[in-house]
Image (cartoon, rainbow, N blue to C red; front, side, top):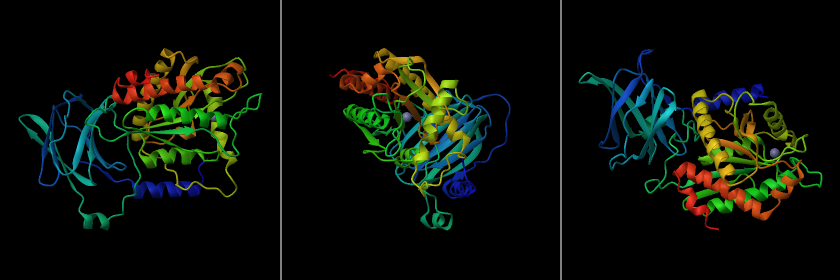
Length: 403
Ligand SMILES: [Zn+2]
């Protein structure tokens, strides 16, 4: 439920936080364009990028925060080339690219400092050109506008194979041990609390992940305390996480059902079981103390559909990779282990987010495993390998065999 107050705050933050520059361009419903060339040239104080395309396209640039990035979207375009690395320059650290929809191509420039972007259309030798100038933000001009808030609006970059030597920024994973405080989560017949299982497994996963070089892990909670679903997602956004993993071990009526499930966000649940699980997870906020209110007005429910779609598609790809790694490493999975539903905790529009139900506390065998130290390591190794392998392309494998 979004109250009127929340809507107002949400719209206000959206207006003040979004720094969206809409580039010019006419609408073209015609054929797909091909990006044939991307030239990156150091300019006096920044970077000049020249794109060549087989025809006119609509172009949009976005300013992104945490970390500072500039993104440019080309509608109705597919790439025939790689952008490569930017030359030595004062502003742009690295360049990435990828399709963010079947017909939308995005190039993202990671910045060393906030910058502004200007787009000019032209033509050259029968081909369309788009010139993007990335220059430092003029302090005075910047201050005269509404000050941008440190709210990220887009995406983790859409290329899972990033990483390697040129990527100095650590991979940041936020692990969210579900429930806590008054909210016990599921409680097994023998009295095991889900909140404890989640925290213990999250810690083991943190341990295993942090054994990888250049991987950082933050937990949404360290102790037994209540955190709202929105605050969990908000933390991942504030930190600019590459991935948000919510860890659960719920309970259902069907005692024989067991095994792990990997959930992503969707408006419509993929099936009735997923709908029930999401409904029970979303009810966690009923444990919020009296007078409690989210300390960050939520823009989750109205934020750019565009960003959300891209994040969801990234999450989907990761979820598929995770399911296949879990299965390869002999972690018991339920039938159709990759499912989706409207989990509130997965609604950060700009952080790829996945919820893992490790197993069911309503099943005795699962409960035993969830408390077993060697299963925990095995499970954590499988998840960590999937995470690192997904973001760094295959480098996960060798490390997780270490023990
Ligand atoms: Zn749960």
